[in-house]
Amino acid sequence: MSFRIGFGVDFHQMAEEREFWLGGIKIPHTKGALGHSDADVLLHAICDAMLGAACLGDIGVHFPDTDSSYKNIDSKILLSKSFELIKSEEYAIVNIDSTICLQSPKIKNFIPQMQQAIAGLLAIELNDISIKATTTEKMGFVGREEGLVAYATILIKFF
Ligand SMILES: [Zn+2]
Image (cartoon, protein in one colour):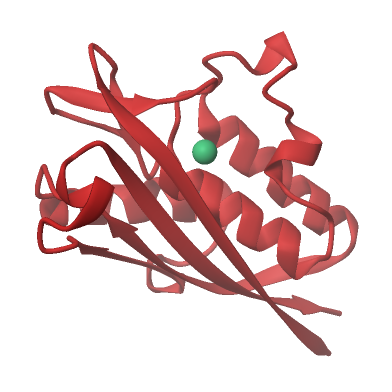
């Protein structure tokens, strides 16, 4: 059995009058992430980590934002499709660790729901998907609530 590691990062602007989708769930907030899809920054970072671990390019290669079929798409579909791509190369997920970086709202209480959503899509256990949250202590674009960032690492195994 061999193991491979992957890393992903994603950024989105925050804007008024957008639904806020994060980690596969909708978070009540006055703003939401702006993007071609539903702009779920955590799911995008996980997609990139997964594709990166298998050396399959990135989310932009497989799901280009110039393709109108991906407009406003639910990022859970992109996550499932990325998972299918690594599965077709005979990889399985060992575990994922991730951090979401945003100033507000507080998302700690939503993390169990996000874990459930992601574990369900990727057929892994809840303790195989770690999600952490931090702020930037009000510094920079995250601190000014102009945007948010997510980072993800993944370990995959090949049989
Ligand atoms: Zn994104």
